[in-house]
Length: 272
Image 1 (spheres, rainbow, N blue to C red):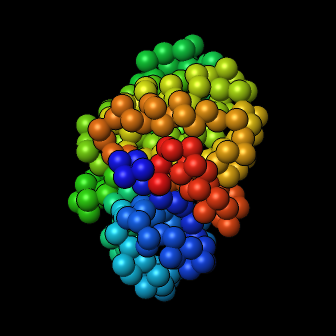
Image 2 (spheres, helix red, strand yellow; image 1 turned 180 degrees about the horizontal axis):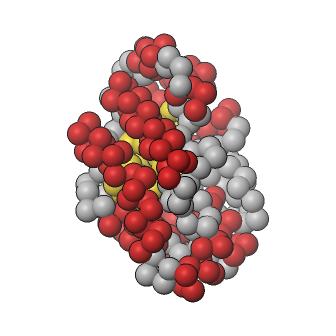
């Protein structure tokens, strides 16, 4: 058990208050979920930052946030919408700086439609990548300045390598790859994408962050680990080939089940 990886969790501040002793018992990485919406980012969010500082006093793991994502794509072709997306990303990084957070999750722009159609319209993905650069360039520069990583999470991605190519295109240590196991399992079960462990192997040491959730290969369940059909032994076998030390973040719909998921990984001899 001593050499096993230590898993962290994504949660709201209310859940952190409930799970504080769990998050302090080991150096567990923490991801805060309170800063994803424009409603929060457009108002005074410093009271949330102050609350976070108090609640995580003594926490030794790394800290990050799930960045804003509702209602937009980082590859939007609309210049007016792009300005709003740029603003949201920078607002999220302002929060990261105030918190001392060192990662922010950004959603991938690639869809299942793209997988079947971009070869006809944008075969080398140049336009898609250019649009992402137009949207994210300021955020990447800001992330470099504050020592924060933007980790690009798969949503509908069928090809696990496209996000790696996108992340590499920025030529910046501030942009890396994230995997959501439930999203990958959905893509595997519903769109015939590779299995979850193949996403890990495709990312290789560009993988700096992973959302651990269980699912059934049909929908984005965010179930407690062990409830669904993700092959966790295969996933952790793949993770064990890496040296990039990705943050292992349990991300559930029912936050009360975070301890149950940790216990499942402990019982399986996979993590602690």
